[in-house]
Image (tube, rainbow over all chains, first blue to last red):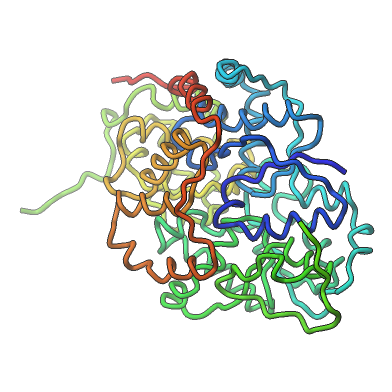
Length: 294
Length: 199
């Protein structure tokens, strides 16, 4: 199975353990990934706050490069990138004036986009292309007894996702259960983590993060599983400030791909787990993990 | 002296035509059909911190209260979680209306000085235009410099933590064809929908 791959800035920066774990996991499942040539920032929420036309151009350059590279679907792991690329697809199709702005800008660089790229989230690929039965076969070290709170955040399911529900998504729940983990009920699974407000307006942003952590603790979770670099950072990096304001809510937050890697028997040091502020407790030793090359 | 504030608006406080201009921005068309049910405010995780609730912002925009809306904190507190957009019974894309208002406020320079959110948006915008990619730590440093450098000092533990976990990176990331990207952005002019100033 082949896909092109749009990492986005976070997976090369603060969220690098997402890429560090996702690539070996996908390789282990026989998925071939080709990173997009000279991809640029998707624009995230910030570009749309400044200039709508330029935001569309920015995202469309990536779509044009992906279309030129081949017919493969575009794996987009970061929630913000996933939203922005999908939104741009919709805007190009729905608004002639945006389409015209994009066409002119791409033309100036001898690029064009005909709207054929499918932007796919890894969860979507894992459930609908690869399949849970195939994933189950690869599990050599079931996450037995590990209580996981599945946290999806907002932008991966709202408003453009077609592969899961906007309020009660279940793809990651099913994936984690396949890995042998105990999925705890987590009704806040799509509540906002505060996004960049944790840095800009901590009183408001950190409160949202705290609510998520507290609820996971209350539900008895050993770990929170997430799909988004910004969610992971917010839930992981601000514990000291949160403790100062509202008291402790200590629980580790990791990417679903890191849990997959552990269940597949990949070595923890290959999965970026050492990058956590709040480390996940090691799984009880069962069998030696195998090393694979990336 | 006793300072008094007028709490009821006059007809003359409105800026005629602004509501229509916002509704002409892509994605904002359906604002006219708002029934003021308040579902947006109820579903918004940040409305408890807002000076005007999302429902009030919808009413104010439609009624041309430009200055009240652009000066409010509400648009900047929107974290783009799209809860309101998904829930609105009239299919109004409220998140997109918030974006249109942010764009308008930045164009007109109407926002509290040193208020970090629009500064972050602008710094992000500039970094992508020149480098093609974001180096998150550099962006945060710039934000501190432009808003509140004392805040950088109080965040020292966060910085140490990032170094310890190998996530602190100040080497600028950039794409190969930077000139190509800058040219493309320039050719996009000043946005797809740029409303004209009305009196």
